[in-house]
Amino acid sequence: MSEKYQVKKIERGKLIVSGKADSIFWNKAYIINGLLSPWSICDGNKTVFKALWDDDFFFFAFIANDSDPYIDNTDNSKYSINNSDRIELFFRTNSIMNPYYCLEIDPTPRIMDFKAKPNKNFDFNWNWPKSDIQVKSSKTNTNFIVEGKISIKSLITFNLLIENRLEVGVYRAKYTLNSNSLYEPNWFTWIDPKTKTPNFHTSSSFGVFILL
Image (tube, rainbow, N blue to C red):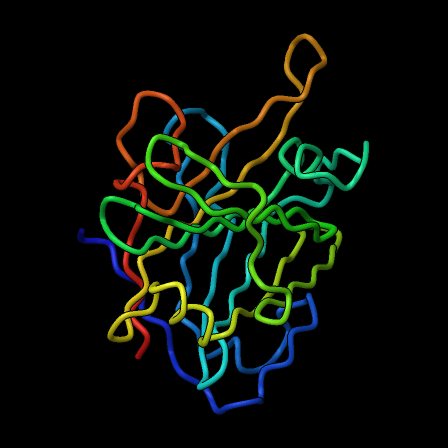
């Protein structure tokens, strides 16, 4: 596994999640500047991802170059979230992904969280404990922003944070109208998994976050 991202540490309790990713502490973060679109010609290169951490929380922020994201407002079910533009973070416990944990968050920001095992064996009855995660969002004339934090305690409990390392997938789904006037997804990823068809649920789509 060659792709690595370094997560800088900040002083405890200083970064307040606003949904705008406008804290001065975000200026300290290294940037993943652009996600790949291996399976389409869509331009995802303006999507920005950042992460930071302190003694209590892992912080993340997505800034997606989309001023008019598609949102399925049928209801607030995971089905509607799955049919909406969203950003995604996956965390795995090991290289065989048994298990791994998924966070898919739309611009409103509704969360579709679930636990998974290999071969897309999904447990949608599982949820990240609400006391261990906070997510907020906002929209500007040019983009939407999803900002959040996850407790270090939960990352340790789920055997995800080991020796200051996290194995993470960073993704985005963008829906566009096709020639039949139906919305269909385009998929963007930090790491190209080298699959013929879109697939984030594979070991080759993960990289390593090193908490400095």
